[in-house]
Image (tube, rainbow, N blue to C red; front, side):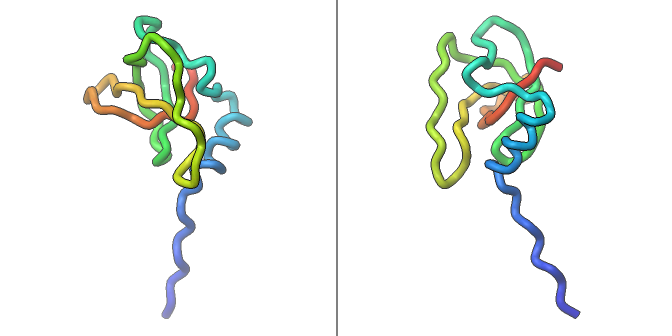
Length: 88
């Protein structure tokens, strides 16, 4: 019996769906010292994060994924590739 090949996550599709459901674009992401917020990552995870930068300079969209920026996870301190954000 053959199994169906699972559909791969498409970060462009995830971003479109997130923007339709109330998430915000990266051009308004809070800066360093403005608090903690939820981010949608390139891999599809939703995590609490804070910005480590005092300026906005997202990485341009390419074949890997949509426009993204790095933020720090509140729980682990690891870097996350955020594609959208919202307040908790």
